Image (tube, rainbow, N blue to C red; front, top):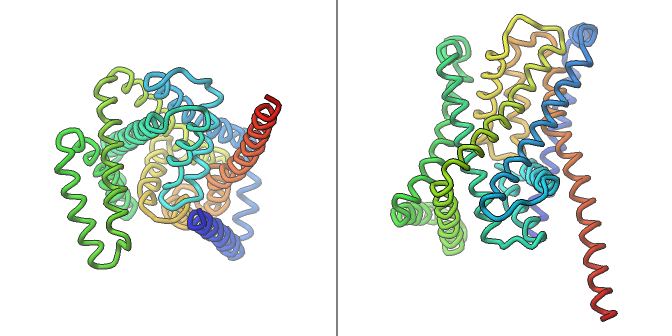
Length: 349
């Protein structure tokens, strides 16, 4: 528990340092460019950004709700949205979003759901998310791959690297169905090598966690193959969920009165930036996400790039931190009150 608190504290400190760095970068921005950007800025498109963000949160909860319905039983949609937001929050404050899934399992358990079932549900959600992310990359490459390879060489290859990592995750999960023992042997071999070079400190614990992960994803993938049609529906929800997230930069682009580039251009760049920073081991990709936006979106936004980055990041990340933290605190207060009432009832009886 102490280690988890230390990790979370480090994450929050890192996020704070990133915010300070962003402010310092802003001090060197051209004041005239910023003033000109705000003169053309439309609040209505900002409201559209908020609408897309809310739909992103809603569809994330809807995806969890849909999977829970055929894996366990139909739960209230509001509960699924709440757990989805909590997962997004903990994913935002932990490196590589590693805290999102475990905390969702914790909150599902509080609602009397078996831990094994909850773990399977979040694993299925992750598998479907990976598939939809890879699908968006493939579609983007089909329509705009040549253009981005020619004009945005660095973004193209960074996104491709991120795609390969995500695709490897999908192949790993598929392989657990075909030959789980082979996956385990390969994993054990890699862990032993990492232990020899001191990259892994506790080999036995790492092996045990790896074996459990394989079992979880083997079970999840088996359920996906059993509920093929329902899984296709979940995939479509996940695909739409990512579309709502990736369209936000285009709405910010329109808010500044820009019309030169179309939706597909900016949507593709956002997907590329997202893939490029997905393997960066910082909370929410802090630092890399902001830097990637400033670097790769400058040809689209010009002098308003810095302000556009602030708006985009505030909506897609920092607002999540605010809403998520309030939701977690509120939920903990309710949980403590419920436990106190249950203890009082037991004492009376």
